[in-house]
Every structure is written in C-alpha cells, then in structure tokens.
Image (cartoon, rainbow, N blue to C red; front, side, top):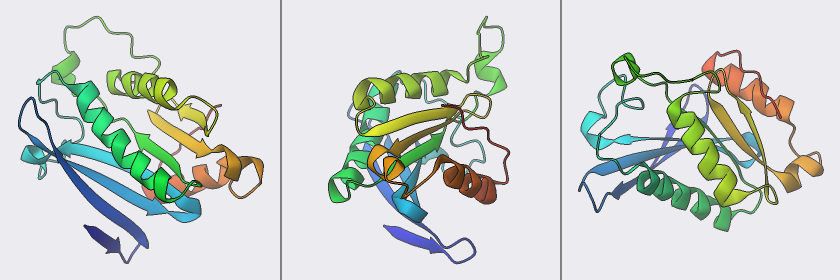
Length: 173
C-alpha cells in the first residue's frame, strides 16, 4: 500500500508480515526520499496507535526473525533498483525496559547495536557504505556506486534527514 504526504512530498509504502512464532502481524513503513534513499520503520500492529509504537517491546524474544523480515523488504527494493540506499533510526529503549539493568548504552540503544550488527554481518561493505550517529541511533547504508560516482553525498543525506526530522544528526564514518 502506498501513501503520499503532500507537505513533505514523501512517499510511504506499507508492508506487512506475520510472525510464525507469535502469530503477531507487523507493519513496515518505507519512506521514499530523493536519490533512491529509503527509510524503514516497523512496529507490531497491536500498538499502531501508540506514540511509543517503535519502542514498545513484545517480549516474544524473536527480534532476529522480525528484523530479518524487514531486511527482506529492503532486498525487494534493492532487487528492483540497484542504486537504492537505506537508513533507519533505532527507537530508544523505554525507561521501564532498562530500569535496574546495568547496561552500557554509550554506543547507542540495545536496538541500535543489534540492528548495526545485523546490517554489517548481512550486507558487509561491498554494496553499501555503512555510517551511523550513535548519539541519535541513526544508521545509514549508502549505495557505494552512487557515493563513488558523486550521485549522492553524505552531507546531502544528513541535510535531508535534518530537514525532515528537525534533528541535529552527526553522521560519522
């Protein structure tokens, strides 16, 4: 399903999948931007009206399967267009989920570290240049062909992200 936000001219595709373990349905939102750049977000359909939907944990202990399903969505875009780039912001942990736990979150949230490890392990550096902002837990996979041929720059992407989300992201290589 596709929707278009006339204010930002962003196109959002909605994908769904169902967990075979928990039987829960998940929604993947894929926002399209200039230069074949796509931002992904996902959440469990049961919490779609919550402002915290991206942070809520299901406690079904199947993050690898869920993230792998999101990666399959990314691969669909890549198969259709070899010039695509991707990005996402790992939602922050809710205070109730980290309270009383001795966690070192200086390099990002637990989600961010998990996503980063999966992206590096599954995609490597041949097709995509991996960069991140650990403070804001944003992760980008920039298409190496576009980057090396000057079709896209990291500064352009950072500027677009800042315009869209009114943040102050520092993209580190």
